[in-house]
Each structure stands twice: as C-alpha cells, then as structure tokens.
Length: 112
Length: 113
Image 1 (spheres, rainbow over the protein chains, first blue to last red):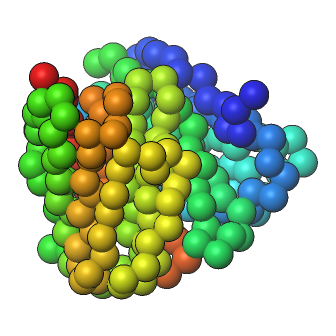
Image 2 (tube, rainbow over the protein chains, first blue to last red):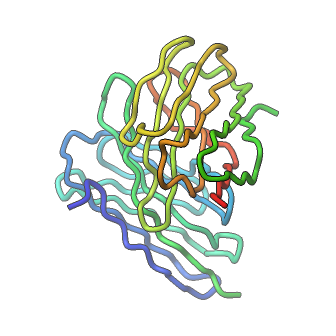
C-alpha cells in the first residue's frame, strides 16, 4: 500500500462546477500538507500549504485537512477551463529536511 | 523574476552515455532537490542538498550523481548505470528545511534513443 493514495482520474466537470479532489494517507506523522497544480509538460506549482488539521481558503481554492481520518481535500469553486491540469497532493512530517511524499496526481478537465 | 531554470527542456541519450541536466535557482534557497516523474508513479526523490558541498541520496539514487559547488546550482548526471532513464526530471528548491513548500523548475524530458 502506498503512503499516499490519490485517484488518478481523469475527472471531467462543466465550467462553473465545484470540484473536489482528495487524498488519503497512512503515515500519522504527516503534519504539513500541500496541493500542487501541474500543467502538461510543466513543473508543479504550489497552490496551497497547510499545517495540521483545519481549513485554508485562497480565492476559489479551499484546502481541508482531517488528520483523524488521514484525509485531505482541495475544493475549487466556479471552476474554469484554465483549471484543467493535474493536481498533486503532497505531505511531510517534521524531518530534518522535511521529506515530501507526493500523490500520483488527479487529472482534471473543465469543459467550457 | 526569481525562479528555477532547468535546461535543456528535451534531451536524448544514447545507450551507455552519461548526460547532465542543469538546474539553476536565483531564489536564494538553501535546499535543492531532484525528482523523477513517471506516469502513474508520482514524483520520486533522487537526491537532495541542504547546503553547499553536501547532498544526500533520496529513494532512487542508483545510477545518478549530483554536485553542489554553488548555492545556485545543482546539476544531475544520469549515468550509464541507470537502466531505465527515460522520464521527466524535475528540479526544486526551498528555504532551509523545506518549510513553505517547493518551487519547481519547468522540467527536462530525457529520452533514451
């Protein structure tokens, strides 16, 4: 079993829909949780960075962390065609260099 | 603008050949990382460096080598010992300890011909 599980999709939604992307994990030591967006043939870019449990909102994006369930989510409101990309979850414990474990990514397509 | 520059964007390697991928950052970040990305496997850590002249193996270091002679630069050499080198290679950097997440370069696509 992988340390971080993420549904690869693809996930297709109409423009304007609310998108929910999720990851589960098995390592209870993870404390830092991230979401990256990766366009095709590009490097990932950091969208959200959260510590421990709770919610964090940034514009149309909301990240949720439920450490008791070992489950994290990224919600995208009013989705746009420009949101079409692969979304990677990532997480780490407080190691000496904070090793990050990535999910395999969920491919999202927003249909105009 | 600050960022990470990876070059070349595409690279072709013949069997038995060593190739070097370049990674330069002007973010004044202490830590730098190399990841390999394959379809369905996510990002896997090859090497990382927290300070100049020091680096550590990641999860899949066999067949790869790195150097960190300058804070700004962290080149990766894919040696002939790496039997399956075709992949998308990503360089990243972060402030010391990785707090705050990584900044990634745009990647190098390496293909064996």
